[in-house]
Image (cartoon, rainbow, N blue to C red; front, side, top):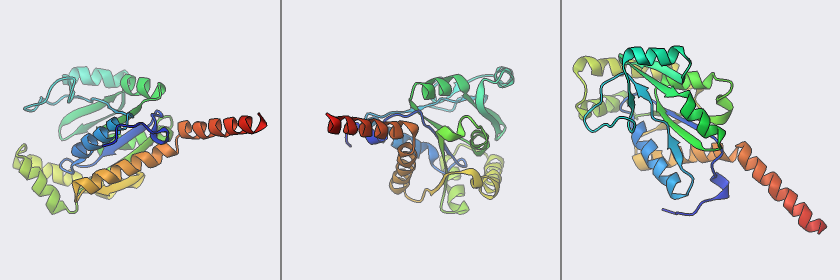
Length: 225
């Protein structure tokens, strides 16, 4: 992996939204692309979501999620402290306005691993949409998705059926507003696709355009000089 920074993909205050059903592998892809951009010296800052669910084995507060009670979560939502929030499989999840806006405002790139409900909210946000790129991740088939969910051994049969039903609704009604769709049939290829989507968006950013304008200005000054 290269450890050189590139002017082409420097931080630009871009919000990267990665979502898809539970079991699609989006968290693994996010981890891989963060490692890649970190190696380039252009980190993608991961926004840690708030949730009302209990921590799973191996999860740590403030690292995987901010674990809060339902009343505290609803109070935050009522005060407008989330840029997006949703009830997913009986638990609430939300992304902090403060954390995301401060980073974007300082020119840092932020990546979110959220559900389709949250991605839809960001897509309809007139302030965030121009600064974001959204990617929907799915498996090659519903059979594969079911196999992955069962293979994790984290859910009851009722929960598995609920997640599969929700995934069908997401595919049928959710993908219209995404910029890119990635079928995660091979982790390495899917990771490369996510890298490409992020880089493509960053090459369109105001920061990249400003760099070109500055280069053109210096070129004209050099010729005059």
